[in-house]
Length: 369
Ligand SMILES: Cc1cc2nc3c(=O)[nH]c(=O)nc-3n(C[C@H](O)[C@H](O)[C@H](O)COP(=O)(O)OP(=O)(O)OC[C@H]3O[C@@H](n4cnc5c(N)ncnc54)[C@H](O)[C@@H]3O)c2cc1C
Image 1: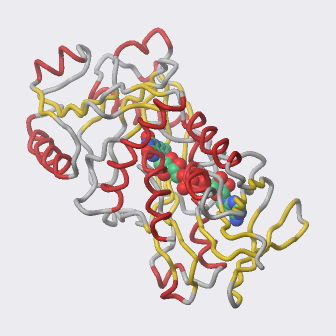
Image 2 (image 1 turned 180 degrees about the vertical axis):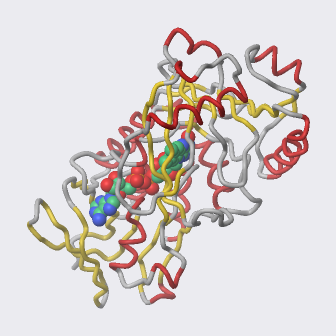
C-alpha cells in the first residue's frame, strides 16, 4: 500500500486549491512545499486581480478556466468571507489607432462568455476623470482579491478534510514503480521518501524541473520554462485616489501592459513590466533605474504622474512556456499515461490568470483523475 493516494508538489494557490478540492475524495493526500510557509512565491507576488477572461483565445484552457474561475472565486469569497472587491476595470485606448484593437478584444472576450461593454471617451471620463481616453472597454466582473486570504481558505479547507500539508520539503526525486511513485524529499538536507499512487506537479517556477525528475525531457516535449520578471512601482497615498478602478492600456502581443492596480487597502501601483531573465534565480529586487520607463508608460494613461512620484515596489516572476518574442502559450495541464507515467499530472506554465483560475484548475484536474 502506498503512503498516499495522491501527492501534490507545490503549495502555491494552485496546489492549495487542488488540495482543497481533492482531499475529500482522494485521501490520504499529501501536499509538499519547499518553503517554510505556503504561498511564498508567485502566488503572493502578483496583481491580485480577479480577471474576467477577455484576452485568451477561444477554446483555450486559459479562456475556459479563467471565466469559470472568476465565477467560482466570487462564490468562494462571498461564502467564506475572503477579502475582495468587484472593483471593475476599463481598458482605455489613448489614441484613435488603438480603437480597432479594443473592438477586437470586445469580440474576443464576449466570445469567451465575458460581459463587456464598449464605452465612449465621455463615459470613460465620467468613470475616471483623470485618465487619457478616446474610448474604452468596460469589464464589470473584473475585481481584486487578497491572494493570502484565498490561500488561507484553501489551506484550512484542505486540512479540515484530512490533507497533510508539509512545508520545508523540497522534492528532489520522482521514481515510477509498479503501481505507485516513490518521491524523494529533502528536509534541511535530510532525505526521506514517500510513496504515492498518483502525483500532481503544481511546482510553479520549478514545474519543468519536477517533470524532468519524473523522466520527461522538458526541451523535447516543450515543457521548458522561461522566467519573465514583472516589476511594480507605487504612488504615494496622497496620489492614490487618482483612479478608482483597474485601468489598463490596450495590450501588446507580449503583455497586458503596465496598468493601474488598486489594492484592497486603497494603494495604487503600476505594473507589471516584462523582462525575461537569462538565469533562473529568483531575484525580486526592483531596479530604481526603471523609474523613467515606468513614468513614460504611466503617463500614457495618467499624464500628471511624474517620475519622482513613483517608488520601486514589488516584483514577481512568471513561469512562461514561451520565450521572448514567441507567441503566447496556453496552460499545459496533462495526464502523462502516454509518456509512461499513469496517474502523473503536470501543470506547467501556469502564469496569469493562474490565481483567478485556481479553483477552476482544481475542478478540471479533479475531472482528469
Ligand atoms: C507579476 C505577476 C502578476 C500576476 N498577476 C495576476 C493577476 O492579477 N491575476 C491572476 O489571476 N494571476 C496573476 N498572475 C499569475 C499568478 O500569480 C500565478 O498563475 C499563480 O500564482 C500560480 O500559482 P502556482 O500555485 O501554480 O505557483 P506558485 O505560487 O509559484 O507555487 C508553486 C509552489 O511550488 C513550490 N515548489 C517549487 N519547487 C518545489 C519542489 N521541488 N518541492 C516542493 N515545492 C516546490 C514553490 O515553493 C511554490 O510555493 C501574475 C503573475 C505574476 C508573476
